[in-house]
Length: 147
Image 1: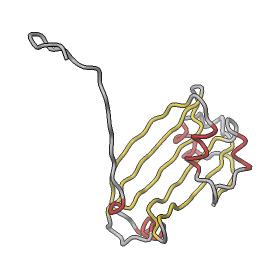
Image 2: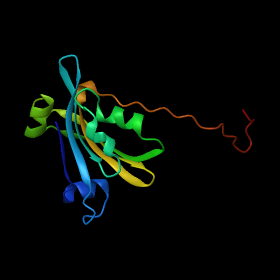
Image 3: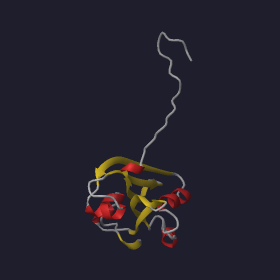
Image 4: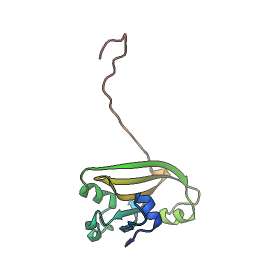
């Protein structure tokens, strides 16, 4: 579901805005599926004062993360990855047994120095794998041949 409203104190904290600014936000809650199985439950806030075109998006057909990637040039963000055990609320939303393992990813997306979006997503632990790749410049150590 998606609801437009004035940001409350929690929203301001997530978006790192001042409480007296109280921007309008679009609060989106969605489930992502692989076949019949829910693999992710997501709660997302979009700052409508910075990204008003989000009002007209049907997030039932376009995932909010995909839409943000396509519509936000020059973005940066903060990401925190963790794990948790499912409580009763998440149990219902992810269709998992209470106590099941989930991975969670918390994101704040910035554009032009302002927080445009906050998201928290929980992923079914048995369907999730995190992979990272990196490539660094060759390193020449003292006394070793250059490669």
